[in-house]
Image 1 (cartoon, rainbow, N blue to C red):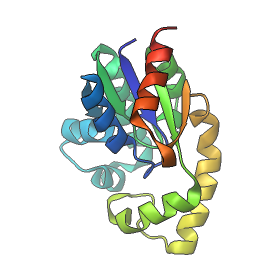
Image 2: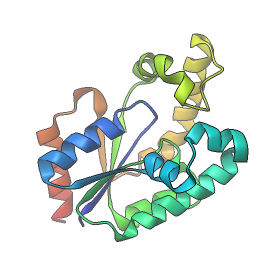
Image 3: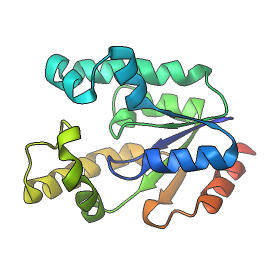
Length: 171
């Protein structure tokens, strides 16, 4: 299969790692949130504000399903994408999935300075943010852990990750 979906909590490095892997493998790179923003002509924050999370999650699912026609592509998913509807099953059926696993405290450090671009985080102080990340990560990890490859994002060796992807591809 020539479609790889990177999943994990916001701030885990999905987009950065996806770009690097795509370059090394000679694949295309696609960011699901960017695709949604282009399709809707609005930022994710504006979609959340104007239409609500439920409408966003439906748009997200449609964008995800539209990836069924792309090949030789690494797709970085939004943090919640695998956790709604039957998205994780669809991801497993249509791609190799890679979970970039990262501890909550590291995510806190990464997300503190990016809160204004993330609708679920913008109003939280440091304590509330850590509590929110821990709670949400606890809820979402049951989906993330279904990925074909679970990779510790703090020690990403692109060569090692690509080898694991290739091994999965050859099964």
